[in-house]
Length: 267
Ligand SMILES: Nc1ncnc2c1ncn2[C@@H]1O[C@H](COP(=O)(O)OP(=O)(O)O)[C@@H](O)[C@H]1O
Ligand SMILES: [Mg+2]
Image (cartoon, rainbow, N blue to C red; front, side, top):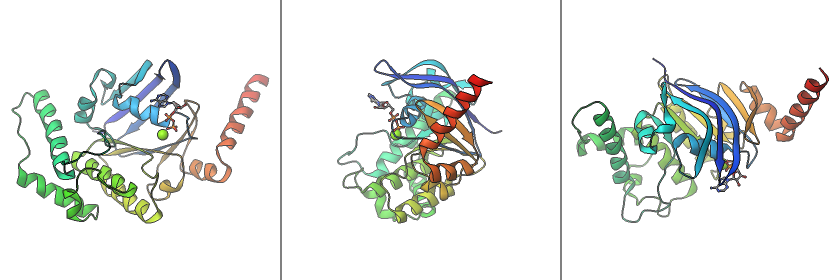
């Protein structure tokens, strides 16, 4: 059975200012959607609000995942249900290795799932954990020593993104939101991270790839592209829309909107 993330007429405020102004979007497992948009259009606000960041107040609308109201759940419950947004932890955690961070994250999800299922908590054993870690690091073509590094201490931009993708691999979400996963990556790092995302994508995984630039979409190819302008989805289409944006820029979308507004007024 496919699982679906449904965003319905969502409005989000930060510090009393409305940033998301009525967004409708449905992402199912097996699908790749891209949200593109100029800086400040509300892309990150949308992703943080789906994952329950406390600074982002949902004032209207609904977010459902697999038919359940996500907005009533705490962020860690959303993760345990199968939603994923890149790392949410302090920038650097001295003394905590990436591996031990990941093990804690895996166990925290297991704990929730066990409680919901009315089953006793069974923490992942060290052997099972390291087996899975090795398997995923292989899949993502990562050097095993990477997992023994302290979390984000001295990580390059590319390494942070790869750690993010490794976290996704270890948690195995149904729907993953990748917000500007391409930012700060050179072309080689972009290719490695994209290969990793593609390796994790499949019939049981849906992706929402949020980006300002078209370039990541050459590697992680969406079936659906949406353009967010000023807190609203201004246009939706197929992959060709990303190319049109690349060619004409975001002003082209604003021109299109201007024209349709005029057409509506006259017609
Ligand atoms: N934590 C915050 N506090 C105050 N304003 C914010 C915060 N986060 C985002 N904003 C504002 O919300 C608007 C949308 O920002 P954002 O969602 O980051 O856009 P994007 O990701 O598309 O660049 C911007 O005007 C930004 O200044
Ligand atoms: Mg952003």
